[in-house]
Image 1 (cartoon, rainbow over the protein chains, first blue to last red):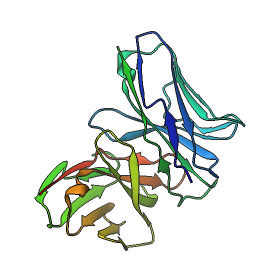
Image 2 (image 1 turned 90 degrees about the vertical axis):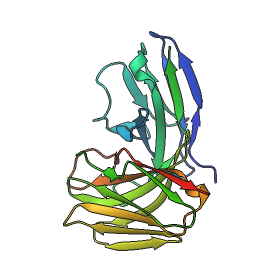
Image 3 (image 1 turned 180 degrees about the vertical axis):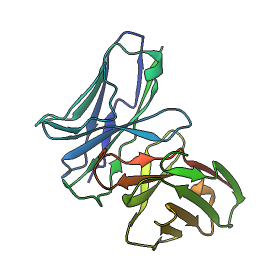
Image 4 (image 1 turned 135 degrees about the horizontal axis):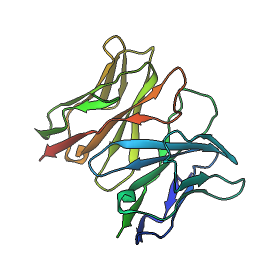
Length: 116
Length: 113
């Protein structure tokens, strides 16, 4: 059973370009979370999605950031018109069930975004 | 202090010694989890303790939770060089709010051979 997969592992963009980060949850998991980690910091929650639904985006910046989890295919975190402050590691996590407050989240290896 | 704040920020011990890390949090929680992160890698889940539990063991790991003090500790016994990593506590808040986990800044643990 493959774990959470993220690609690319490293992404370099120039200011103003778009960044697309992909996440495939563990098999059997239908809930995806995105987190951002700045250097020497802990992870910060961004958004929680189920298939075709955004459940909680309270941690997402209001502009330039969007996320989706289509019926088919991976979850996508999209950052438009990137700025240097977007440089960070972006982690995806998945869990199997809805509504269980006890669920463990399983993390992918992350995508390290560098904005030049 | 922020939710899920670990202490100490850095810890260096000799191989074979025990390592203890602490975590404090502010809000009511459903559970508290500890994760390990090796440099440049993703997070590995270590252990989850529920709000109605006081202590939990997993191999060389022992976690305690004191909800009255809003604190948790992670003890790694008989440390090994491979335990060198950053350790984060993360809380799942109760009573609504964000669905994601809230992480602290982590404790950087170095095990010297």
